[in-house]
Amino acid sequence: MMNMVRTPNVFQLVKGAGEGRMPLNAFDKALLSAGVGDTNLIRISSIVPPGAREVSGLVLPGGSLVPVAYAHIDSGLPGQIISAAIAVAIPEDSSQPGVIMEYEAEAPLQVVEEVVRQMAEDAFAYRNRKLAAIKTAGIEHTVVKCGSVFAGAVLWYE
Image (cartoon, rainbow, N blue to C red; front, side, top):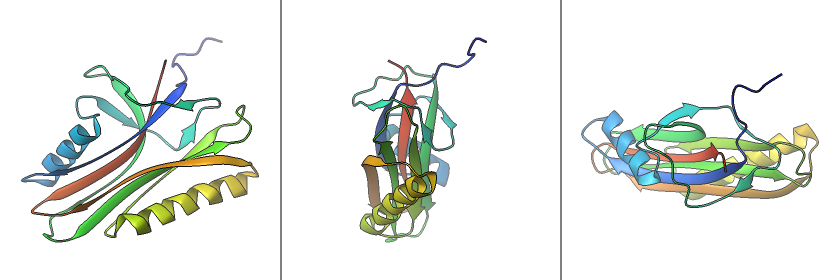
């Protein structure tokens, strides 16, 4: 049987924040800040394909369909702190899939990162998988007028 969709073999953690007149504009600016604003994001559930490795500096073609697991939050309350973080749990056995966890809150980044790391550890514990590493990326923003934060794990092909 032929696969209709290629399985990604690399991932990149991205993050961004933005301010806008409206929540969608703030979110769009956060996506641009993260380097994924000119792509069509396809939100996926939270599994990293076996053997996928982390890369940096991915160049995503404009308009491409990009699989991504992500956290984001918007706020229109000036002075409010908002944060989003992503955690990728990598298995010791590279033939097994990894897990991506996402979390966002009206809280400092330190709190959000602690929660998302624990979620990744828990996901491995109930899968009975040995954890090799957890990779995280997160961002905190203090809202000026209408703010948004975004943290994602982009899956791609090399």
